[in-house]
Image (cartoon, rainbow, N blue to C red; front, top):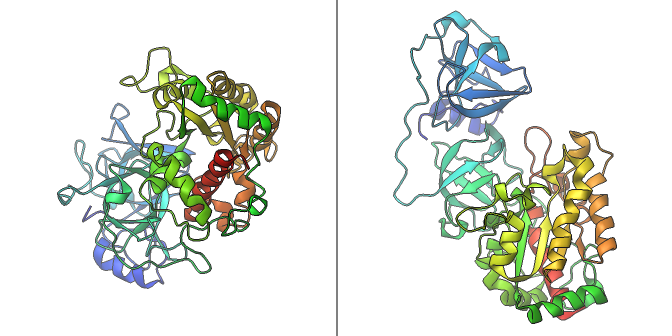
Length: 456
């Protein structure tokens, strides 16, 4: 990654001074590289970058309205410009007409052919990589209070230098101190295999992997938080009957989107990366269900919706049958007795069909003898972007939970008192869980399993 430039966020900060030397950024012009004569600001909603200066070239990255980049090169007719994109491994050409140009474009050098990003420095042997699944801020330290020093874009790939001790932050292998929160992308390996580097800089007032504030350090059912429902007679019967149907009572599955990815969810239980100091009663539950936390779910992927989770076209062909969607495939392979369904974020533009689509996995699970545990979402994308009334999807989830008499873990209620409502602060409308909410998600899952296991 050495040699790539980051877009400067705060010229006044000390890290900005460091970046001037390491990344070639001019402190007086935040969006420019010191050798860039002009900058480009995206004016369309989404501008796709390509490998070369032609519409036929492969799409490589996406840039969003309002984001600014230094211009490194242009085509001979100035119809295309090549942008400076931090960590880019492929071409970054975009139509000039998709943005506004600040500065003399004729001073930008003309590039011939498919000139792309500078060659990457070879990563250390065995190093893991991080592929960003959305744009995010890079920070100067492993803390939400650390200064924002750059915007990194979806689709970029970085070599990981290590993680913080709480496994909530990843340090990228770049010339400057650059950290991103866990969950902003997909790791090429296990987070537990990454070395712990640097000192942990906790957010003021935060504790490692916080548990919900209502959870107490004992096993009295009455102190469990309100967003963890007590199992009804029907719920207990479905779970108890699972063993008789050949299902594993000590196994649970997960069906969901990016916020259910193993590296920010079940793997934290698998590798003892979740702090249970304040909830010691959960240790036996974590131990009992631990074998199932090492598995990669066939029904978890970024962008999954209530419709795609049931569609065979989205299933893994090497593991699933031709007529199986990801959800059916996961239940067949895992033989789990419980499945947590964390969906809705990816339905923000199809919210009118959400209820009908969401019923399908609930009914499929019950027919298979598996107890579905519904999980509300933390974001509000369907109202922010899709035009739905506020809280529409979560209201549907709660109502269907009552209708089918299955548990609802209300993550929306669980995260109301968290920083930024439990969401990562990122460009555009937020929908990824932040580090605090990741901790709450894991603890809430264990609390629900505790209640089902003990029937309380």
